[in-house]
Length: 87
Image (cartoon, rainbow, N blue to C red; front, side, top):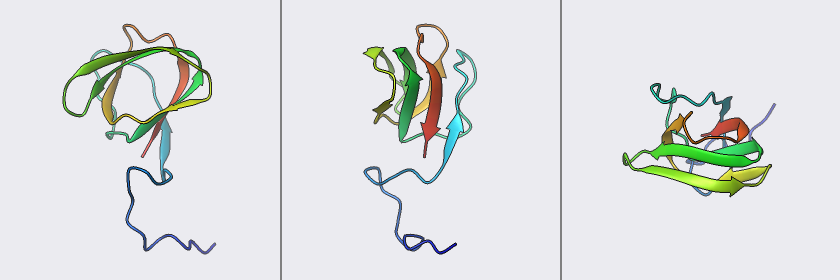
């Protein structure tokens, strides 16, 4: 199948070209830092950004995309589910 955009450089504002399911963990980093997170089931999302700071996003609605570069989604404090990493 042709891909008209294969020669374009990926950007943080462009669409994701890869996605993977995330299982929150307090000890394990994501296999790759993400540019955004898709939250399938609403709740709170606790994470560590690529700069090393911790953040908790409260009351995230189901179907939301969080445009945050993260290398870990923490189990402690995360009540949201069906989280997908977007790269």
